[in-house]
Length: 156
Image 1 (spheres, rainbow, N blue to C red):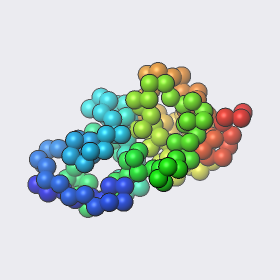
Image 2 (cartoon, one colour; image 1 turned 30 degrees about the horizontal axis):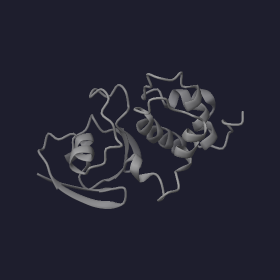
Image 3 (cartoon, rainbow, N blue to C red; image 1 turned 180 degrees about the vertical axis):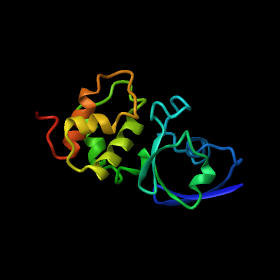
Image 4 (cartoon, rainbow, N blue to C red; image 1 turned 60 degrees about the vertical axis):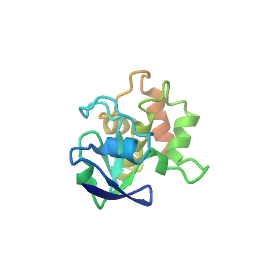
């Protein structure tokens, strides 16, 4: 079955089996390996991407469900060599350790700021509840999101 979607601004049309998950379409067929497979049960959020501007866990939907949609992955956030403000904040605030959850965490955080531009610390923690990190205590992740929102973070 042919599935077409705009991924990071480029139209991609690929033949896949109807049961292909969006995460595997992105990684295995489109070659965008920044989206990680963590749990296959939607518990960890490592596979979070934006579908028509909304954060979704790409391990819980079929690629055919994203047919004719716009998908943004972690690779699509930066503008050439210029990091997205959230990516820059994660870098500056050391908001990662092993980095496995980072792409999904960043995508969820960008979506959170789209909905709540100036969140409180509690709102950041609640907004990222669907994304798990096994390495950190979340402190620097929250700090990075607040910095990207313009509420400080690195200098606090």
